[in-house]
Image (cartoon, rainbow, N blue to C red; front, top):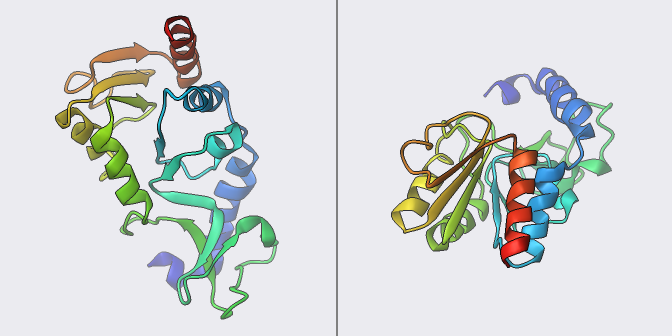
Length: 196
């Protein structure tokens, strides 16, 4: 509701955090390792809560952005979507070329629904997973936090890579790798290279 009431103030903050600061981020070894696993047929999809497009930048193809993406903007009036790169975010707020209403980033704000088709595709992948990798999550954000639990109920083995135990570690995790994502994913890729 704050965004609708104060779009200029909202956009100034959004731009600073998600486009100026996080917009400079580049894929790391964890993103690249997951892309390698996908390329080798060992990873069918990535379900991410991140909105930064780094999995795509690393080369992954099947990505379900559970919370949306900062790389597109959406008009809440006419629902048109546009690449964020097409707009000069120094001129705020950006306006829809189709209807002149204010655009918002195509990621969810508190209280908004998980976007489709990300929700249904994430559920589909979760239900059919043999192995479910949990990487760098505390397991506290609903409804995303329910996906690993659903995977476990459907028979998946849970491999968790985290710097510290999470809400999942003692409940559903089968293998816990206590490392940073970059180190843990890299070690997993090396191990799988030897065995496959």
